[in-house]
Amino acid sequence: MNADPQLIIDIYNIFLPDQPLPPGDPLYVNCEELRGDSNINQQLGRKITRANTSTCQLYTGHTGSGKSTELLRLKKYLSDRKCFVVYFSADEEDIDSEDTQYSDILLACTRHLLQEIKDTNPDPILHWLRERWSGLKELGLTKVELQDLSIETAIPTFAKITANLRSEPTQRAKIRQLVQPHTTTLITALNEFINDAKNHLPMGKTKLVIIVDSLEKITPTIQEDNRTNHEHIFIDRSQQLKGLDCHVIYTVPISLRYSNRAPDLFDRYGDIPVLPVIKIKDLNSDIPSEAGLNKLKEILNQRVASVRENLSLETEVFANQATLDRLCTMSGGHVRHLIQLMQEALNEIDELPITTKAAQRAVGVLKSIYRIAIKEEQWSILREVASNNQILNSDKYQDLLLNRSLLEYVTINDEGEEEVWHDVHPVVKELAEFNQ
Image 1 (cartoon, one colour):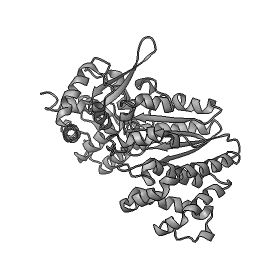
Image 2 (image 1 turned 30 degrees about the vertical axis):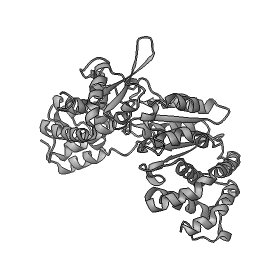
Image 3 (image 1 turned 135 degrees about the vertical axis):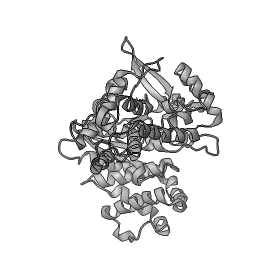
Image 4 (image 1 turned 60 degrees about the vertical axis):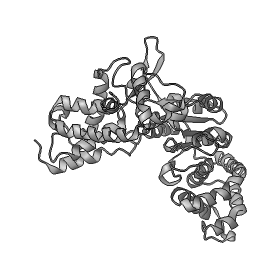
């Protein structure tokens, strides 16, 4: 037993599930070989560095699978190759994932471009604002007088617009009513700004890139025409999202990638790379693979070692190897779930090591969440996927992909080809409803 209370606190706080790792962070573990050799620099980065014209790409994966960490690595890759990169996570300050429309995304892009690009002629954006000024004043979105409008006052004005879109439901509809009829002119103004910015990028930079993260968290809702908001944003409004005259990457919900609109997405954006979860077992096997478990243990060990070196996972952090293996296996190879399970298990004890009971209680928390999330009619679908490891291009699979009841894995076969397959989350497989 290790009765040092501070040690548990320090270990607990190194397992924060919602913090992406910056490039070069010692906590980062390369998992490419267990994600089907998935390499974001090759999948997205090369298209940008090699293209002579602007590109617009989508990127997806399960929420919490590590996309933000990979996108931050991509930002560094591009920055090292003469690109000026504007990266932002849209859900932090700009959008409400429960209610998002395409115009919200364009406004967020405008705000961040204005904030990060200096020494550029802002007149096109200022002119667009002047045309909307009376409406903005009526909505209380600016206290600045028209004659005092400048780049210094425009930035907080756009910040206030996006902040109200995110946090003020009563204002949201009014702002959209004011902005949406004029998105075409906003794109035109923004492109004038962008094209001038390209001529004033910092020394050595030759390309401008925008990375808009966290759009995959947009909650699916059915619209009046019985189609989803995801379709309206990424398909119906693709011309607007693709309209910026620079390189752009948007994250997109994984369910849309496997919907019956997938051909339309491909026509508009090309192939959409998916970041799969870490493969913890082989296809057509229910036995956890040694390589998969070792990779998950490496993730845990990197974090524990950053708190105190030479702590043994198997004997000092966990009561035994079986308990450690159990916790790793029940994550399904999903990084955020692994980190969340670790936090939950640590909450069950006052001193190390993590006992079998504590680990099982942590797994039980995740089980209870999935039991609530899965609808009665979905159990048969889950059993079917567990049997054949395949999903169909059908709406009935989308909710299960979104809530991670179904997880995506990739295997590289003997010919070097990528085989994509799906399986039911391990905690779901242990629920009584699944085994009926």
